[in-house]
Image 1 (cartoon, rainbow, N blue to C red):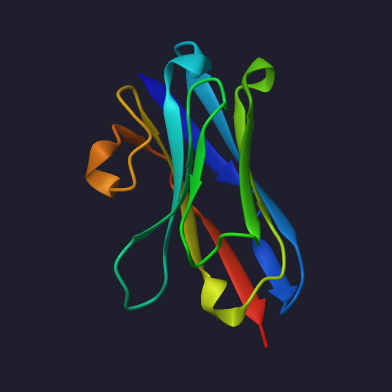
Image 2: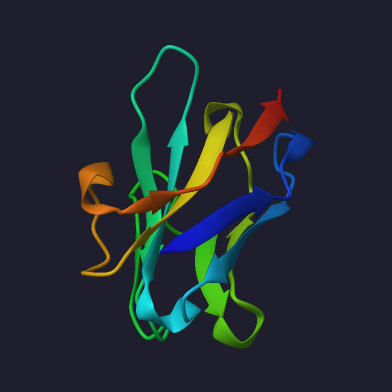
Length: 123
């Protein structure tokens, strides 16, 4: 099993940047594919990005493609989500999740979840 803790959320203005971190503990981190999801008030949780075990493959939702970049540093047991050109519609609680099988775009594909970190983008 693995434990995940998100950090780096906060309040930024439209067009600003923010980097989220997902720190993992437990079994060797490189065992897991990791995804980022977000949930805005009154909306379902949606896929943001995912990365493979060694970081060789990534996937980004159309809504964030070109603005957000997922990456990982297995030596530090950490996955990052670099966010730029932020928009008010990016406001949400952001969660990281780990899967031992694949880098799914569906939240049901993930085995472990962090508690989330709030990102608020003001207009």
